[in-house]
Length: 253
Image (cartoon, rainbow, N blue to C red; front, side, top):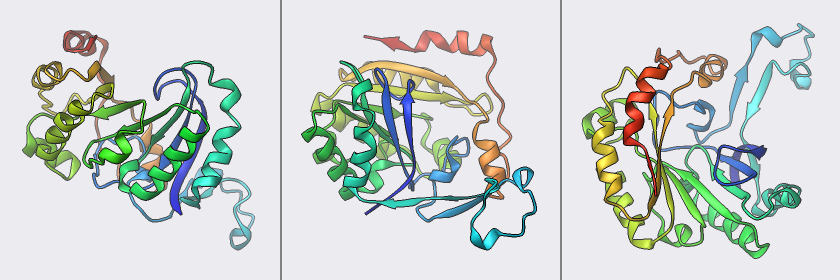
């Protein structure tokens, strides 16, 4: 059994083509800007949206208005595959499945079984990961990897994510040795000294990195943080000028 928060269909932003994105619950990191804060805890959680409450007084029977949402569902690999197979007719030559989170590699046995089942059905598989965990057996089964390198300085990285980045940098270099195509990404947070120029230089030295993307921070996670009774982090969306300036560090091979 594994813990899943959501299975999103017709995704266009989680890899090549039209994809099904399976969101795993739980992550060893706790990035302050995470847009999926409900995926950080490994436990089931209750999200409460008071504006949706209709005051029916039937909370014990389940919420009919969507004001109270239980986040986290235990599923077997076969159940996940059943959901994925509904989308297979739409994948075409480039689409497939992306395992995301949270950190999918934090549930290694469950992830491995899901990947193997997809491979047995001829479905392309990918993973979105922080590379805080390295599992060569699973990585070797993937068609490509989308990996974040968020901050260059390890102390700053620890301040904003809860862990240093020495192991992540080492895992990037290990992954480079496997020869699996890697799409590297950095979420741009204007208030944080991320050292993007150093990140770009490091990634350009890794032959497996076929693309480096800079993604502007967006406050999508703030509504979910409020529903979890957590404070908003207070970051701002980077302006077009900043993204244009930093754009010189992005690259495609």
